Length: 393
Image (cartoon, rainbow, N blue to C red; front, side, top):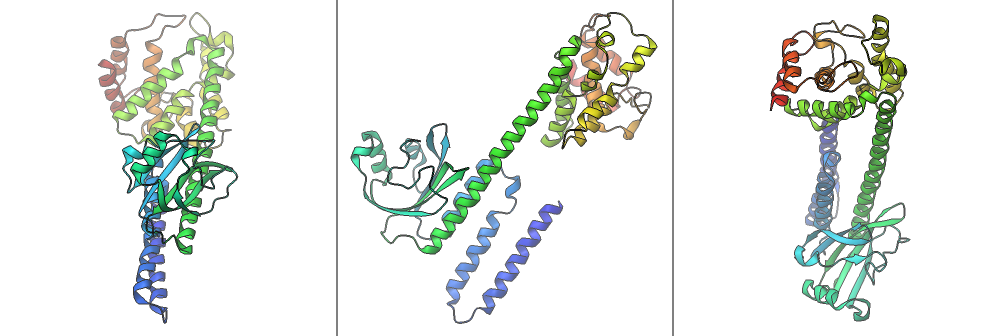
């Protein structure tokens, strides 16, 4: 909320400053000044809440913004690199169904345009008197003629780059032979740089997410190798936990944290001997005391991972009982993170419905009867009721 307020205040401050400069300008044409002022305010508006937008929403808004600030542009299109081909994803002025037929190979993308992978982020202008028929297939020539981009038009374009690779191109076209002003070129270059930065951050985020997922998978695999009875358990607890959280109307971000914490809730069992974990009979009191240390080991392992503070807290407390009889700290009621209480119900349900060396698996109905019996004791009443309804169907 604070970040949104800060952006709004910055926006209002920018508008006030622009109005002040507008009034102070001497000897300039008032109409032109009004146009320039409105354009700058429009540019500011395009970037409000950009951090909360999806990729498509952001790119479409930026694309429309560039067109709105460049008066010479009559039509425009945005192509994105997908595999080894550049495909259109946005357009204004052209029939999109027709434009979609115009796909360029990476090797010969945008013939006549300076869009090699070594081209810098710059706004380039070219007047195309007529396409070179020898460089295109007849099908592509026919599509260009249908679009009106076969001859007699001027194109202002800029590559979108990530680490020197052109991952897209934005093109703005005019058909009156006037060309584009220096200001329009600067505006397009600015937008191309913004879009390039967006793609760079997106790729970095994807790599970071991939690494995050690989770490989680590796940790889960480590405990499943050691404890054969937990194989598949973590995945099922995650599924059950997420189902409960969705039913309770948790946000996507909250569900993601619950999902990861549920997947890693038993990682601390790595610190428990294999003999105890795989013992076929009932555990002794001392052995059970050792088993009860696994939440602490979970905390010790997960807190070493940057950005895992919330996830660590959820996983660490998943054996705390609603009435305070759980472990390791004997927390009760609201002292226990609500997310941990969700994982606890999911964990208990899967443990009861899974076969163990010392007992056969209970039926879903039997497990739910036990959960119902322990509402207000081991389990949070609200969560248990949701789980019973979900798993009864």
